[in-house]
Amino acid sequence: MKDFIEEVKRNKALFVMAAPAVILVLVMQYLPMTGLVLAFKNYQYDMGVFGSDWNGFANFSYLFSSGTGWLITRNTILYNLLNLITSQLLAVLIAIFITEMNGKIFKKLSQSIIFLPYFISWVIVGVFVYNIFNYETGLLNGMLSSMGLDPVNIYDKPGAWPIIICVFNSWKWCGYNSVIYIAAITGVDAEIYEAASIDGATIFQRIRAITLPSIKPTIITMLLLQVGRILRGDFEMFYQIVGNNGQLYNATDVIDTYVFRSLLQNSNIGMTAAASFYQSTLCFIIIIVVNAVVKRIDEDYALF
Image (spheres, rainbow, N blue to C red):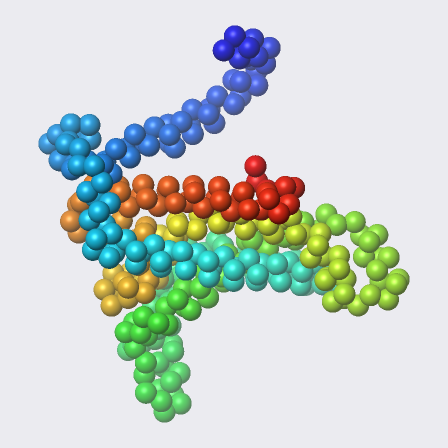
C-alpha cells in the first residue's frame, strides 16, 4: 500500500487521466455485479434485493429441470461456433483478396462496400429478412411463384434458420473483421513478397507460405477473444431476425433471448439472474481453459 501511494505521488498526472475510465468501469461493470445475489434468492418486489429470502440453487434447478437450460446452452454454443468459423474464415479470405488487388481505386471501393453492412442496424436487417421470407409478399415466394412453384413458409421450418442467421451474421461482420486482418497483412515486410516473386512463387504459394503464417498470431488472438463470448448470443441479431415466433424457439432460442423473454412474460427475476450468472461463469471457464490449451501449445499466442 505504501508503494502504491508513492507511485501515485510520482505520477499524479497519469492517475488523474486514468481516473475517469477506472470510475466508469467500476460503476458500469463491477457495481452491478452485486445483483448476482438474485440468482440465489426468491426475489420479492416489496422486500428488495437484499431483503428477499435465500433459496440456494432452486433457481438453477428450475432452469435445468425443465430442459430449457440445456436447450438454450446448446443453441448458444452451436450458433456462436458456426458464426465464429464462418465470419472469421470469410474475413481472412476477404482480407487476402483485397490486399492482392492491384487497382487502388477498385481496392478502396471494394473495401468500403464490404465494410458497409457493419453500420446497418439489426433492426434494418430484420426488415430485410422479413421482406425476403414473408410468406405472402416476400421476395423468395415472389420468385417461386413467377417460376410456377409453390410458396414456402420459411417461418414454419426451424431447420432453415441456423443457415439464415449464419449467412446474415457473416454478411454483417466479415467486413469489419477483415479490417484487422488487412492491417496484419499490411504489416508484413514487402521485401519478402518481392523475394518470393523473384523466386517464381505464384500468388497462391505466396499466400500459403507468407501471408497465412504471418497473420497466424492475429487469427489465434481473434479466435481467443471470440471464444470468450461463446455463451453470449448476439441478442439484437436473434431478436430482430426471429422475433417472438414460438415455432422457432427450439431452433433459435439462446440464453440472451430466453432471459429477455422470461422477464417480459413471467417477471421471474431470480431465474433470469440464475441464467445470466450461469452464462457468465461458463464464459469465464471456457476462456481460461482455451487460453491454457493455447499457452501449452505455444506460449507466445496466449492472451495471458
